[in-house]
Image 1 (cartoon, rainbow, N blue to C red):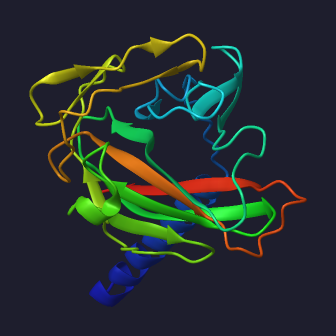
Image 2: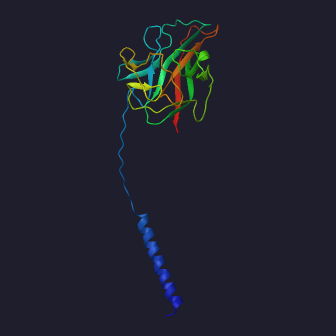
Image 3: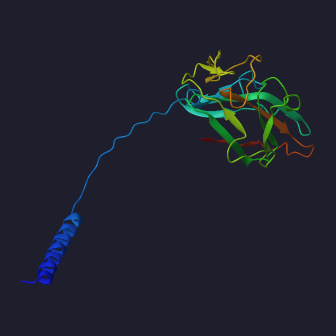
Length: 235
């Protein structure tokens, strides 16, 4: 038998083997099981958590849980009873704080406010000194301005430094710990001292300043409600 015929038979045999293998592979089925687990916690206990500070007109912190410690929704009650008039501006320098408990830095990129009822007269800043107005706090970054975004950055407008996975404290310098105890009335953790400023990229927290800037022709017959969205990213 000539060498050409031998090579041809070998090629035919290889082809048959490939066909059989492809048929075998096409009829295989694999089942794989992967389990998962996660927990849901209180907003003041999360890896990126919210703490209260300033009080509303009912002497309860603006940031509060409507319900119990274990259930209910987190709200900002800026003025109870409608005691802010048209033509007035009311500013809270520390409505709430945002605290990072992750091992790595968290970047705040922008805010979004969706107003549900009434016009949007809200202005929001991120800043380091909880007792200063934005005019005297050089760290202040405007993130919302009455219906329009303020500063926004795909990377970051403020960097929360790494935390320590402990919801009972936060750090201004990455070392010293500032206690964030529990408020049994508002059902949130809080901080009320004003001697430790937040620095972007170093501190694991930042303060949120909110102004309600109501014009003289503002509608006094309606309530003003909505939702504040805080957008963050890693890396």
